[in-house]
Length: 227
Image 1: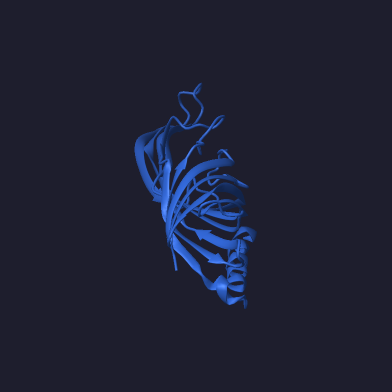
Image 2: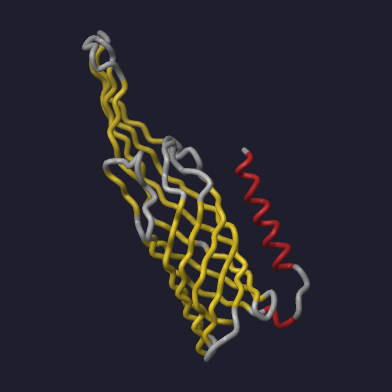
């Protein structure tokens, strides 16, 4: 239950930062969207499933609030359509032909949301272009359906089939968390911002019951308008 307490804390920090009385110039907003290409694999050895279903592209809205002349608060919401896998499983004693045996297939169909909250620092501008660095914290939610199907045979009973679906199953950690650090450049043309960026996140745990890669590296491109 402890992991679910992090979400109210994130919301509380965001409310404090957005609601705190700050100078008038800092009320400016940058609104837009981002698309991310994931460089690293989520699924990796030693528990790499035989078939994986993972999109390498994430996308979603972004908002930035000026806290000071060069300091901003950024919140993104990035959606990944597929992060699942298919594998076979066996339960029983292969050397005992009379024992009951379960032979099945597990198909996990899931999606994810990445929600990073970051402080962004802009260095001095050069021809309206600014280098920036960000540091913050990200939450990831993975949800979907675990579909198990197959047959049970042996043990002196006739063979039977099973077919079950559950919203949990292989997904044991719907929420995972980790620090995030990034760097990029803000190419500014009037009120428009074009923001290529390289971002690294270190997740604290795997969404599934087996090991997944904690290191996550993404290349992002953001397009936004300053209000």
